[in-house]
Length: 497
RNA sequence: GGUUCACUAGCUCAGUUGGCAGAGCACCUGACUUUUAAUCAGGGUGUCCCGAGUUCGAAUCUCGGGUGAGCCA
Image 1 (cartoon, rainbow, N blue to C red):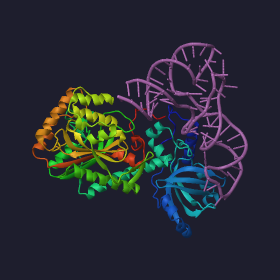
Image 2 (image 1 turned 180 degrees about the vertical axis):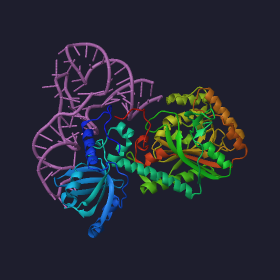
Image 3 (image 1 turned 90 degrees about the vertical axis):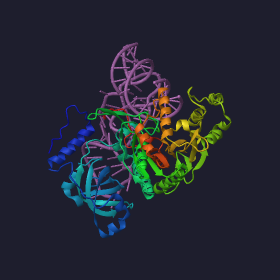
Image 4 (image 1 turned 60 degrees about the vertical axis):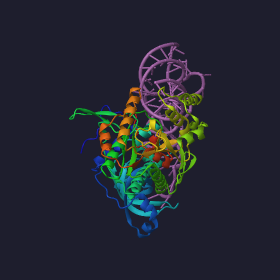
């Protein structure tokens, strides 16, 4: 066994010295303070649920977990053991354990991970408790845990040392278990609809499918710069060209942008593509998916987010023109000149660029003034073509595309459209995006000739959808910040003390 | 990027007008064989985020920096 001497430079306080001394005491008794395995027969919840039966049969139970509290009473002591299912009380008694094992118990600290065998009983107050017959130390904890009553509140520590957050703040564990349930529910929904889950490259020679700045990395052997993907869209549409008909990818996306309540540089999205469907069918499916996932996870489609009641069972649909009219009282159907559009934007104090046309200005107004007003679930449909380089033009009005975005509680949650399958138009859209890039828009879409080539072989009419999984999890777990639903949110590096 | 706020013991937090660094929990010593935020008696364990400056004297005032959070862009 390795010697557990504190390193000379390591900052170590009295509390840690005490724990190291106890660890050494175990070693001196020939007991390894760090275990190898401990097969259990139950979790805490199993025992609580089956307590009467276990008690009557005097059955031996075998559990393991972390000591969260110790209440010593001289020759007998109560403690709280926590495993993934929750807490259970355990009882150490000198009569039962004998002098030697009871002395070993005295070397345990809050935070230690132990394995326990014992018999279930109920205390005078009726609490289901395991009377410990034997126990083993599975991992000595050398650092003190945050306090049990107030928990860990320091936001920085909670994010940097999420394991502490998970140990002492039970609601956090629930949130992340629910995150997994949400992702499972999304997969189940799509699998049941015949979608094929696929994996496409994370490292891309061209970062496409969205308007965002990419992270750049370098492949040494090929001696080429590569981008981390900013979307999965263009690869998935290539698969529709290839005849896979219904595909989805659920995975990590990277965008080189700032960090706030709703943005983390890496986040999770799901994108789906369905051949022979248009954006109306995609909206129908999105509506079903949101409601189904909410029911699977919360048991109901009527949820509360940050004090606001939200009914996810129905999503209204409104055109962007109507949404703007409704929110700010400006009717863009009457706008025929750029000057009119600019004066409306000026009046609303919404900034725009000199090269923006009427509909781009309207989109700026929508983005700045309208989105935040869309609290109940709303599909906004009919986006300007100028801001939607991958979507198919509307049949009646080529200035607009058959696109929707879903807003809930003022936040964009999903984006979908009838995919642009005309390679001639797609090429022109990319050229237009290049012009935007030359005008200084670093987020404008890159030219992707390889994708154009794929379209030239023929892309079936296709409906596509993208959902921000993190935002969906925020909504369904009532979390105010995206950092509350990402286990390890990105932060500036700083050594843990 | 701008702006406001926060940073004090392992954790949660006080700290007055600039005058010896505080509390609860945790921890240590002792008592206690059904407690449960156990209780009782005793014990304060600290780079007051970092660095300058002002001052007889700075956790406190000033400047610079760091990290985080909120708001704005």
